[in-house]
Every structure is written in structure tokens, then in C-alpha cells.
Length: 340
Image 1 (cartoon, helix red, strand yellow):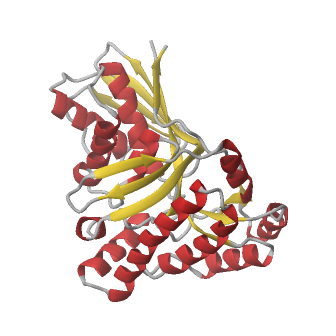
Image 2: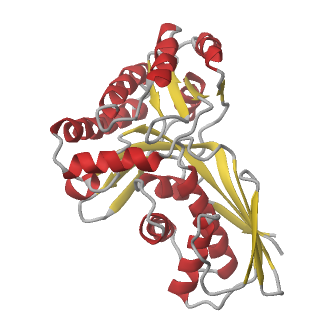
């Protein structure tokens, strides 16, 4: 028997950063995101020898441990250990024995929610195996708690919900901790046009998002007017971007992305740098009407809106920076699990 799962990565189209505490706890946040055909995968094979073998294919790392009711958090595949520890604690399950293999389609630190999506996929696989009573909201909330509370990793709230629900979603984060996921019904021709015109470019750099997020949090706690006002504007732009996509007025996408990028850079230092600015300017000069970096910033993926047939000129212009454009499609399905 083998238990499998896959969860989609996401593009944060607007409002990213307003889902991060303490801003979302004080003011509430709003984010528009969409999942794409790039995934985190997990496979579980039960064992009977009281051993646990965890293998991360993309990180080329394997660890072997005796079966236990708690796996030590020691910077060795801690995301997976955190899921295991929380499941055994919450559901009073005896120590398990298994092989667990994971793979993620893009590198860590690429700004597409890889860590949170991996946690969601692993949690989904365990839920499938153990028949845990977890609905979509329950699973996303638990994945968020494992990463943020149990493991103490900095970040927002949108990624786990995007990976679980899938599709194009307008998410609201309330000051009482409540999260509401509003799925948007987008016509197929609009989604197809959007994926054609929205170039996903990997800069071949990664970053430690926690440092940027810590600075963002400090700015909110200290009452930095510039940072807080920028987040207010980003929240407003998420609402405007939602309306643009729902009405199919994609020609306005570039303008809104451009505004989002300007406000995003005001949230914290380190979101952009000289290389990122060069890439952005080259894309605009080649025909893109706007864009932004994906995730917290500092590196990873960027995306640009390229109307008409300008995508080809933009891709060619970006070749000089050594990265590459990544093909994808928008997906309507979130976390999937199955047993074979």
C-alpha cells in the first residue's frame, strides 16, 4: 500500500504581506492568490520494523530514525517532523513506522509558498493514511499552526489555505484570527489569457524570507507610518485586482501589479535589490506593463503581465540575467490525496 498527496503552489497576485501577523491581527488582511500547476508531493509507505525513513528528493537528504512518539527538531527536515509530532500529540496515536518521500517542483526560498505547501501535502498524506477528521479549513489551520506555532517559522497565513483549497481565491484574514476563503468563479478564457500573459520568471536566486518578514513585523509593531500605510494600500489593491479579474478586464492587471510592487517595497528593507530592479526594468522596457516579486521578496520568482504578444520579447530580454521563464497553468484543484 502507498499513500500519496499533492498540493499546488501559489502566485500571490495582490495583498501579500497583509496576511502576516501582527498586521492581520490588528487591521485584518486581504489577499488574492491563485494556484498553479507546480506542486509539493508526499508519499507514505507503511513499515513494520519500528523505523522511520524520511527522504527529501529535491534536497537530496535522507534521515533514518527509530519509531518514536516525538521526533527531535534539529534542522533536519523539521517541517515533516513537525507534522508527525503534531498528529501524534493531537490524535493520541501510537508511534508509527513508515517511509515518507517528498518532492517540490521549485526550489525552497523561491517565493511560491514551498514550505507551507509541503507541510500541507505531508499533513494531507497522513490524514489520508490515518483517516483523520479534517475538513479543508481544519487542515489549513492545522498546517499553519504547525509551521508558525510549533516550529516557530515566520510567515503569513495565505499559503496553507491556497494549497488546501486551490483555485483563484480572495482570502480575508480577520483581527480575531478567523479566515474566510472566497473562491472566485473565473471564466476559462480569462484564466487562459491570464496564464498566457503572466510570465513566471525564476531569477535563479533564493532568499531567507524570515528575515524580511521579521523586519516587516517590527515595522508594524513600532508603528512605522510608511510601512503600515503601504500595507493598507496593498489590501485595497487586492480588492481592485479581484474586480479586474472577475470582470475580465485584464488590460488593467499591469497597472495594478506595478502599484502593488511600489507599495510592497515600502513594507520592509530587502524586498528588492539592485539585481531585482534591473530585471524589473528590463521587463518593462521589453513590453511588460507591470509585475512584482513573488512572496516576501529578496529573490526567487518574479512575474510580469505582458499584454498581446509581448511575452516573447519580455522572455528574450530576461535571458541576459541567467534565469528562465517557467511554464505553468492555473489550477482549480487544491490538495489531493489517494491510496493505491
